[in-house]
Image (cartoon, rainbow, N blue to C red; front, side, top):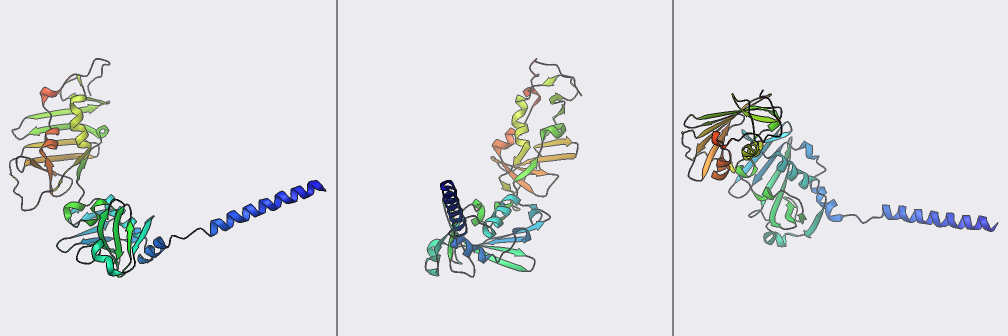
Length: 307
């Protein structure tokens, strides 16, 4: 009998604990700020957005979605940053309510005169947010038709920029070394160096001697994701004198990069895979150079036959 009472007491304690946990789970404090901010987006799905427009008083840039990628006119846009911007505006993980009236709009930079207006469009519907001053913790944001101001984390750094150069994809070319069959560097004067890649080793065309990869590494690393400073402005004078061409043959096709001097510190690069000329620093341009005198035989740890 006594044992039954002990069991009953333990069961009672267990039920009380379970009840407490259930009540605590269902009575967790609601993040009122986050709920209120998400109401501004009217439950839009981020996948439905097909256009983003960023505008300041003097500048504007429009990004359009094509398939899963984003473009600025004929140019490829930085799709990752565009998607991050949309996600943080429509589905932020954390926001903090800063003000509920328009009294501090000017101080926080979210008044219409200072803010960057970001308009998301899905079909025939549009939704505008005003992004104000940045902080280390994030950006001040409000809905264009709402006075409440929120602090949002994780917006892209370029969220307050509204120029084409800020949002264009600056990676001019991506090259996976393992996919390369032949790499040819042609200097403006006509000097040419062709290298073959086979079995994990590099060879000078016409030679059976495998090459040491170390002298080639800076060039190959730069070509893996050739990142420019931005687009060369249409009114920038680019000399017609070709300074270098790099031709990369792979199983999927041929990439060709042509380089032209702009000034003493800048070069322009143009790819056969995308429109426009992109600016490169002199330092990066020099990294994309390789002469026959730079080549060295592979250390004699193993012997590899030429392709």
